[in-house]
Image 1 (cartoon, rainbow, N blue to C red):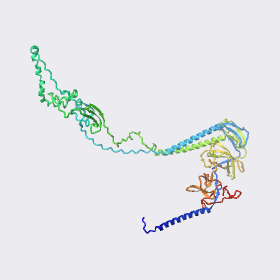
Image 2: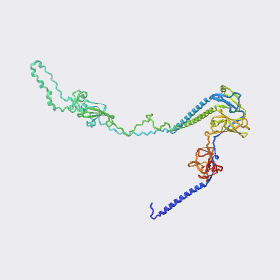
Image 3: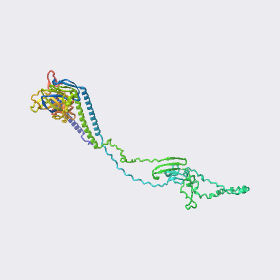
Image 4: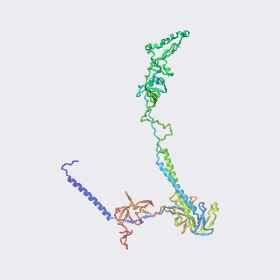
Length: 627
């Protein structure tokens, strides 16, 4: 951007600097105002112990009846062995007196067995969860896409064979190409079982036919006259040397030699044998049985060698198609070597699709052979199996807890004030399904009710329960004196707790110390306080004193300077819908916090409501901190 020469640049700079200064003054003023407001603001605070509570477990409700004649009955147990009985029939006992002692050795073995069973169930659950994860991460089988077969290309027409096919190669066989040299040998098209005649081999090697030399004339037969006239024999002796006509014929033979051209030694030398007979027979008897006629002269005769020849076998006996095999012979070197031409395959050669012909061919489908529907069903089945295994783990844990309780309660004590009414031997009691020891109580009132199996280990002998009467409207405190080791045979007992109502129930008995207004058989509503699995001294702060921002949940906690400061905390579960568990150690019951809402609830505000200790420890506030 080009500015004009007379543009007031100095004024612009002054204006920008002035705006920046004004903005800085505004920000500073706001900060001072905020800090001043925080320094002058006061906020009411409360001690944590006043706005928090503790959690001791859930409450459960059940129903029972009051009875004035409570009887304690002990039945034989096959899994327990009695080591000693401390009472006899007719003895008077009080609550807490020892009645008998079970053998702890067998009970300890039972506990160990239940521990192993619980570990086994947990392991099975762990393996099932791993299998579920594997199934959920398994890709379903996808049917491979088989490409459409490409149409076969129109075959290129092969030229017809122009070479003559030989099964027997003679000196008159004509090659279809070549000059007979080592670089360009004669090439013959032949069959795999073709043979070479001797005439061809002589031409190949360049050997002259030995029959080309003149044949001597046979000696004439002698006359009989010399036997009668022996004197004349010497004079007649020269006649054989004068009359040999064959010796005179060579002088006239040269003029007649061109007539037998087929047997010219330079063109077609003869060899012995059947092949020679075939080649050198130039006359044949005519069909009428008359005089022989000359054999026609061949159209082609190989030149005298030596030369190089190659013999090839091609597909479909066509020299234009690929070579099958062949051999080559060099008449000069008298050597032979088999050869095969290498036909290279094209780079883009396509292998035939045999997927339909061979069912054993497999495809890479991501390591899975299950379809999406099969995987979905398998995952559903595995989830159901995991649910069943979780129940098995819970049952194993319950059995272990019961075994531990049996070990802890190996010593059986009286739960009533009364008299030992009967004491029989175990075999008789087991055969008749009756108790072997009965203690009958005659004083006070007792409550008989049931609790859910989920409360075993959370409700104990000695715990106090509260009972209320429908008839008189009074409340009664009762102490649990007995919890049955065996589940009830029926579900006639009312249960209104938070546990599964379909699970087993166990009978318990509680003694009412102050039973004014109770009648025998009167119905009572009973409230049990179940201890928490992890009951502790954790603080449960009222939700209204907890606020959150992008950094998390926090409280306005009073610091050492008697001013509130934002303090972040870690929280847990909510109880009674209005208290939140404080899991961090940044807050104790002795600390003070402010209500985090309102115009005065700001970081740095002065705490109001903390009582100063004006005794001898002057300068120390109610929290024990320096003021």
